[in-house]
Amino acid sequence: MKKIGILTSGGDAPGMNAAIYAVFNRAKSNGISVIGIKKGYKGLINDEFFEMQAADVEGICKRGGTILKSARSKRFKTNEGQKLAIKILESRGIEGLVVIGGNGSLQGAKALAEKTDMKIIGVPSSIDNDINGCDLSIGFSSACDIVTKSIDNIKDTAVSFHTDKPRIFAVEAMGRRSGWISVMAGMAAEADLIIIPEENPSIKCIANNIRNVLSKKNDCVILYAEGISRSDNFIEKLKSELGYRIRHSLLGFQQRGGSPTTSDRILALRMGNAAVDKILEGDSGKFITIQSDKIQVKELDNREDLFYYNKYLELFSDKIVK
Ligand SMILES: Nc1ncnc2c1ncn2[C@@H]1O[C@H](COP(=O)(O)OP(=O)(O)OP(=O)(O)O)[C@@H](O)[C@H]1O
Ligand SMILES: O=P(O)(O)OC[C@H]1O[C@](O)(CO)[C@@H](O)[C@@H]1O
Image 1: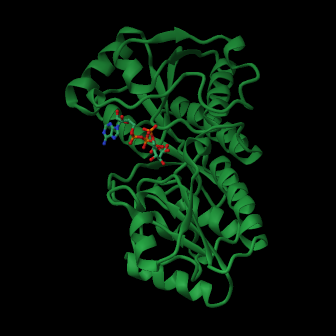
Image 2: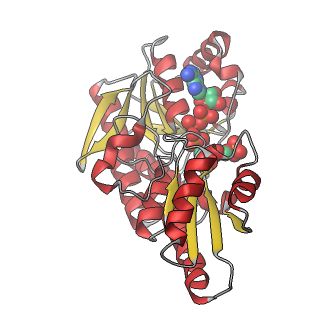
Image 3: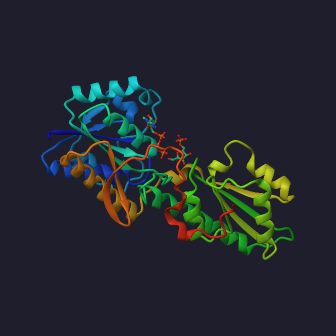
């Protein structure tokens, strides 16, 4: 094999750069040149290619985001878009492709692999950690750290300041369909209640749980995943159900940025190396995964509505509102 391509796709995640670093260096040490494809599948079908050099990856492991840039592409999801992608890749003499991204991006890699002999391997990278069959995706640890620290800060003021009326704090973490960040950061920072889309409890049920917390103390810190509030005005409804003010914090896009944690960098380096190794072994249409600290290569499960929930069952407690 002489030439492989690499792209980052979907929501960018801290640690993507360390994966790029590993892929580049592993490929180079096997005498393979690496073609960087900018802006994910969007850049792929727009032919945004460049030959990567050592200087491109020097010092990038500590940097948040992705030097290759990322994007979402509706056109790539179509059969026509995927055929065009293969045509462009083949015309560039690319024999292998590493796709670094979340669940959707990995589905895209699998769809491409079904249409070509090119060796295509996915590397799971999403702050959401919503990839079935994989304990940890790149970026999750970094995002959790940010949310844990934010809850720590909010708890300092929640427990320190007293008012006659109860003080309720609601903090929104990222996760359209997955509550993983909320569960992990909520447990680590001792949030009082954790609300996740996998359970999707009613407003009445959440309010009852809050009343229960407030029967023991004067403050209640709730961490909820954004999927809960997408379609309706969750905070307003909760406020009118409880009859108390809710002090609301949206953590927003800070969760997706910043320098990756050591564990995200190491995970990304291990997975990036493994992706090149698997391409050289002739694997395709699969993704690199980590389970019980063992790096493996797996078939991607097609179901999009997976209940990712029982990865760490032992951590679940009565803090999660059901
Ligand atoms: N089922 C699919 N088949 C082919 N391509 C897909 C599929 N799902 C997604 N893609 C492609 O992958 C891109 C990224 O997917 P998506 O927006 O779901 O983000 P992601 O990779 O899951 O990352 P994150 O959830 O962290 O944002 C899409 O814009 C689309 O081009
Ligand atoms: O940049 P966009 O498309 O608004 O992405 C937001 C979404 O991406 C994610 O951050 C995952 O990367 C989700 O948690 C969030 O809903």
